[in-house]
Amino acid sequence: MQTIPFYTPTVFLDKIPIRISPYSMRQADSAEHIHRNFQLCFILSGEATNTVNKISYNQSACSCAAFTPYVTHMCDSSKSEETPLLIYISFYDDFLTSRGYDFFPYGREYAHFNGFKIPYFCNFDRHHNEAVHIVREAINEFNKKNKMSYDRIANLIAELLRLVCTESAKDKPSRIFRKAVKNINASVKYIENNFSDKITIEQLCEIAGMSRRSFTKYFKEITGLTVTNFLMSARLNRAANLLATTDMLHDEVAARTGLGDHSYLAVVFSKYTGITPGEFRKLRYQELNSEAEIPLSKRYEWLNDL
Image 1 (cartoon, rainbow, N blue to C red):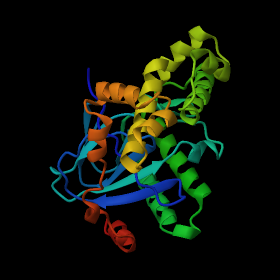
Image 2 (cartoon, one colour; image 1 turned 30 degrees about the horizontal axis):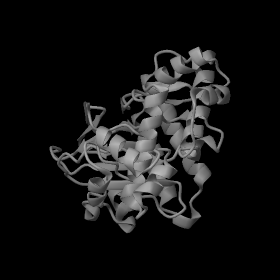
Image 3 (cartoon, rainbow, N blue to C red; image 1 turned 120 degrees about the vertical axis):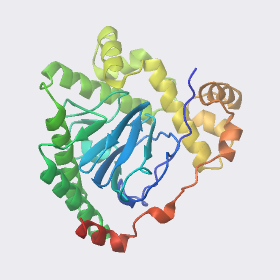
Image 4 (spheres, helix red, strand yellow; image 1 turned 135 degrees about the horizontal axis):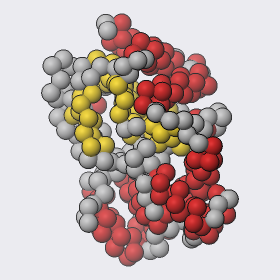
């Protein structure tokens, strides 16, 4: 059985639901990792290879990779002839949904925006200038810090996602599929908010307002996982997050994630990750190459040089 890579928590600024981080670096393959937020990697200049779910894609300037929650990914920019400038846009799904956007970030193969499938990779061949303009505007808005407008940034991200869909979409999603995406999203949000409780398929079907047959069919089609596997994956990743970022006892971690007690946590964690919770905790995440991040005061200089 393939193991789940170590959980790597994305660092967010305190009480800020989004982070836009330009990086300029040549870096060899980073370790595969997963996290529960949605992330876009936009390349303004240079080249990089992004790998998502074992599928690699060589990105050049004005291309975008999408990393969905609980999906493995990694980046290698060491072979770029020039030091690349990568823009990471990280946020939780409610950053968009709370502002009225139909956004479903989960999926082993695709996320969804307004019912359209968001591919792992996109080259902006037809919308090059527009995509670059949107990303620059988002960075400028984020750099205002306390004066930034969340609504403005959300609008810009939505515009970028629309471009990604416009570049790649062949067919407009049906009304039935769009409704299914919204219903499945409701059930996934329930899973995320109730890790510690016993969750049944019957409960999730009722929340989604779907029959068991339709629910299980669309859940697998949209998320890429069965309900049982998705629930276990979400719980294990939440447990890994708590192990990596807190000093909670293993019993408390198990209780907070619906994994029983420390004995059952140890069994399933070892089964799916290949190491025990204690071993994982010793390997807790530490940010590497922090010096490679462009200082806030110099981000405009990098953009102006393009």
